[in-house]
Image (cartoon, rainbow, N blue to C red; front, side, top):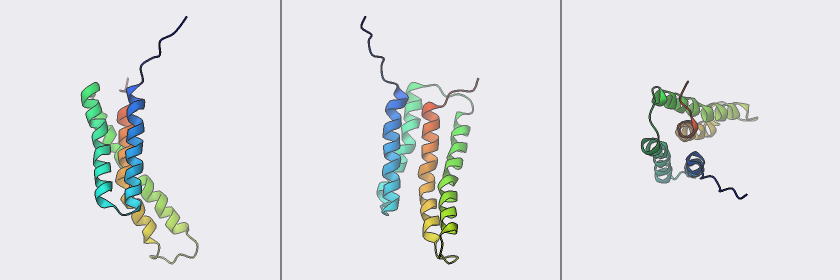
Length: 126
């Protein structure tokens, strides 16, 4: 008996380009290409919004949870790079601000990734 292949999942199809956009935005921040980083981050934010508007219904609390995850994700690189700057041996206080600034520049991108992943794969509460 031959089984027909199931259609591809839309979440999986959109998660790949969203992660590629996030990687592009992180790379652009690292090489100081502000225009490219802004364009990639803006597109990254538009992906889940357009997807949700076209394919799913919005339920109560979705936007609030998405914004909450954005703020949570925003702080992850700031804390990680701040820890690395503090733990850097031989670094005088105030001399390793490059790592902290890089974490701050990557914050909106990582926050956007948290929101995108939640909006693409998140399920409504029961």
